[in-house]
Length: 265
Ligand SMILES: Nc1ncnc2c1ncn2[C@@H]1O[C@H](COP(=O)(O)OP(=O)(O)OP(=O)(O)O)[C@@H](O)[C@H]1O
Ligand SMILES: [Mg+2]
Image 1 (tube, helix red, strand yellow):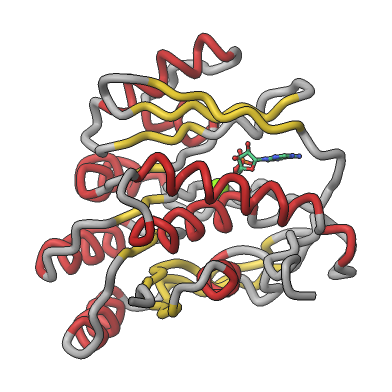
Image 2 (cartoon, rainbow, N blue to C red):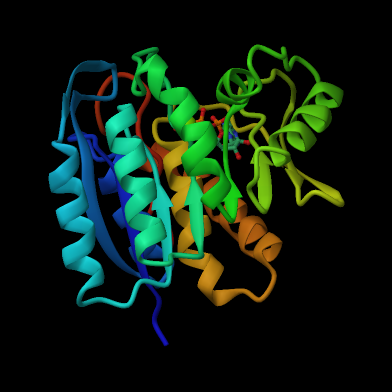
């Protein structure tokens, strides 16, 4: 059966990140994509020039209307923006008994723009993360979630991944894109064991939306794998191929998008 997957995220009009990138990813990986708009942004490959919140009650209405009709097999959460939106989304996911949730705890854009209000961090930590099957923080996000614990080495990452697991998700995927080195290493922790995913760091500035693409790929692939860690591995392989093929696209003058459909065109 073809899985139906939902992204609840912000919109990046340049299509490299957020809901549009999530839908491309779902489509590339054989899932039927649905989307609830949680925030609007004005952005391109060079930066974010503005953010517009969507009323929380209308986000709840979008979710409730969708779930009233469509079977949803997995959900990916991206930019939520505010405390009110985060707790509204958490309540809606609980109301609908959603089990397979990938949480990308988006806080700051690659260009440095704040995408989550500081007072919402605690709501994400307490209400959103415990609902997650998998969370995919990058290193700065992990430092914030762990209240300032610095993460500068692979050894720090291993400790941080375990500490993040105590916040309540089933699996942590701590992304190492922000560390230097020939390899980009991610640490996966399920509370009892750790797995490291090593990938050669690709020399490119086309890394806009890598985090969005990865979390969306995990959500698309979870329903197709018995072991969620196999879904994470397959998602990472897909992302690496998307980054490697990004040079075939010509989109904008800043951090360009990855090529979601490298297998097709
Ligand atoms: N240059 C690169 N080459 C290969 N893999 C990379 C590269 N940059 C990032 N990755 C991988 O991409 C994934 C996303 O990592 P990153 O830490 O950049 O996420 P992020 O900061 O959340 O991204 P975003 O800015 O899109 O939110 C990770 O699996 C990371 O290892
Ligand atoms: Mg990110």
